[in-house]
Image (cartoon, rainbow, N blue to C red; front, side, top):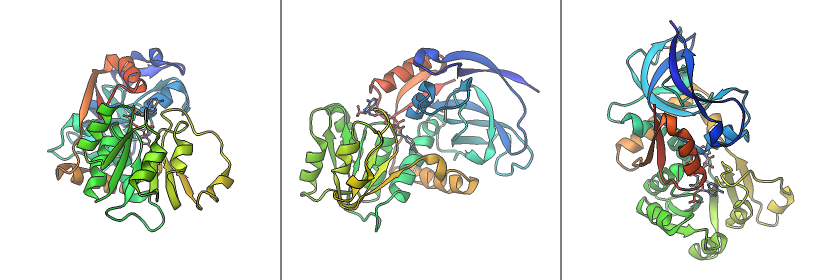
Length: 330
Ligand SMILES: NC(=O)c1ccc[n+]([C@@H]2O[C@H](COP(=O)([O-])OP(=O)(O)OC[C@H]3O[C@@H](n4cnc5c(N)ncnc54)[C@H](OP(=O)(O)O)[C@@H]3O)[C@@H](O)[C@H]2O)c1
């Protein structure tokens, strides 16, 4: 049986105004698929990259990479979910900005009863990202309690989760943020230090905080504006984990500069490599659920928008007006 649901779609790449609320058909799940009815959908910076075409997908494109709700139907071969289960996901392909959708089951996990739908929609993509960064994207020799790490945009969606999780791991997270109020928020969520990089030179401040040594790893989702400065925050053999482009993509660079700066390492990391299989998705989600259920990591939903107001949500995110997580309510 095919039903019609409301969804947000773009016909061409561009600004927030390109997103249109449309009615789309949703059918029965095929083999390996589920149909999920969303109670909340997550807002992520990757949605902006997909809307503008920085990350190109075929058009027309239904946006959204994160959601939580109730499974309505499962296709052949799906054994870990059944109709009526509470569930959540962060995944490709896009399509979460909708009342309901059909999608691959391997990306979807059962949601524990004590985690609310909006909390889940605010933490799956961002929390799984904090998980693989802090636990699997590590400098040579790993990280030990007491180590400093630098984490840009510390008051944002991924950032506030990372501040708390890093503290739980015993790490001293040095955050950066675009205002003093955002710095206060990062500090209140476990950052050991926070640098307002709108008015302070973060490279200099990191050197001061670490007694001239620099950090073993920088987690950089800002891209163009911070790339060079981030490299200069690293100690010898340090790792630059580039994982986003909020200010624009990192331009091509000369690999030779990594030698004199101290035999540095660089990776361009993405969540989708880490959640490529059902097993890895499940294991990472369980780790995330456990740290949230323990109370060590709290998910702040600082902005809520109706699905129809998605353009305003994108404007706020791009204008750096948001903190913590944002959800869209279908
Ligand atoms: N590779 C991955 O696996 C992966 C997964 C999830 C997220 N990400 C990346 O992680 C970053 C955070 O994602 P999020 O969804 O949680 O977003 P967010 O951090 O809530 O929002 C982005 C933040 O980036 C900062 N920023 C700095 N320069 C900016 C500029 N020119 N324009 C806009 N924002 C700027 C702003 O904070 P300040 O005002 O404090 O600077 C802004 O609030 C994004 O770059 C995203 O693409 C990557």
